Image 1 (cartoon, rainbow, N blue to C red):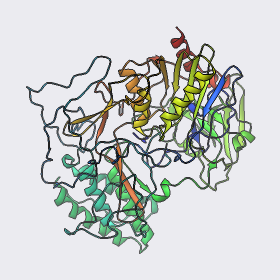
Image 2: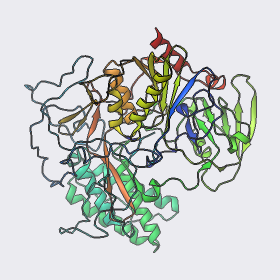
Image 3: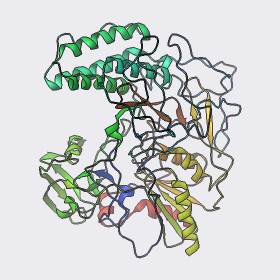
Length: 613
């Protein structure tokens, strides 16, 4: 359920050895840094389950898994002029069905029969939807690094027809990439109007509610993105005007394509420039969906960063916060500092409140200046010093610090850390729902049980960017059987319940979960299930609200790029929407700068007290 994925690709998540011995990366949104768990607390004993070094650095956000559903291959392209057909009647209707309030490009929803009963929920155990079609089973499969986010990423070599067209004269078919079969390498080519056309029809054929989308907002957003790029480069053209559109999918495209091709022909004869403008059109097209799990990516964007670079700090504000995130009102503070980085050399410490960056105030009249986040994330190989004004919350002292960006430690693989707190409460944290993480978590808990009495479990998923939703269902199976963890619903209202893994042995332990606005995608699905199924209290702050639905990757015909599209929507066990809303905690316990500076963790203390009561 990907981070948000929420975003092309999210920032790297915490790794390294921070000087924050309280929580480290569980609370850190990185600022050009890899930040990890702090030094050991002498009052705790640790049992750590190391990550499998063969695992990718992070998961994809619910890629379809053909191994679990052999029939769940890519949906056949539909005639965009015809209404979608269904092999079976809909058993339920999703509240997502073509809601123009949530997606301005979506047409009106089909009306429900007055005689049709609404979906029901099983009290305390989530809704069960019986007799539902098993088409497009969307469960997660492994892929490569992501963030906040959770985002589908995978090694990318397009499998679409290379720079060609189908028999009807359209670009090569838009086919979902099989996550279990690496695609054959393909020579890269330019991104052209034909590539934009392929993306356009791919959205209409495969996106959630695609056949009912109004194409006009999509094409308007695509053209706006091209114009912005023209203006940015100082090459605006008088003919760059959006043509009149009617809302007919097939009639509008030739008009748009001719105008876009005219713009590309009118700019300087530079293949790279024309490709960049076509890419802008694709990115604008996807931006019109307002979907945190839809996006554009290139092969370079999926590869690990060859030059980790920055300051070496974690922040309480992520630069990739989803649009649904509430307005940030500050303060902006450091949550962790990685040892051996420029920030550590400059004397920055966890809890330092950042008041200005290069003379730009972080807050002006109570309004956050998001531009400071860019200044705190310098790109390789920039070495211009970053001037910070910081305040120590425990002393009130203000300091002026200059930090020269530099190389950072490589991002480590996701891992599980388990700590036994006084009173026998297991504090278990992991920063992504990566493939195999549930087995590692259960192994770590078993290790703590072997060394002492475990009276309850606190899962710390603050800052967890999401990943493979099936891992969360496996973990939930250690606490309850025979219930639905979440459902994936199509625009026509049919839903597929995703059960918890009844094959996981029950632990027979109480649990609590620590959450914050860094918990996204599959992490939110896990948190919502815990809340709806009454498995334990949530403590902390509201989650990110970046959990639209399972996405698949569709390679494009330029051989270098692909688009991510969810065809289903995710609903929590009681049938509620969490995307754009988030999951609220049962007990509000935000982390403050003073807490970090004094090594306090009120959320963890509250959860431990609840389990001990």
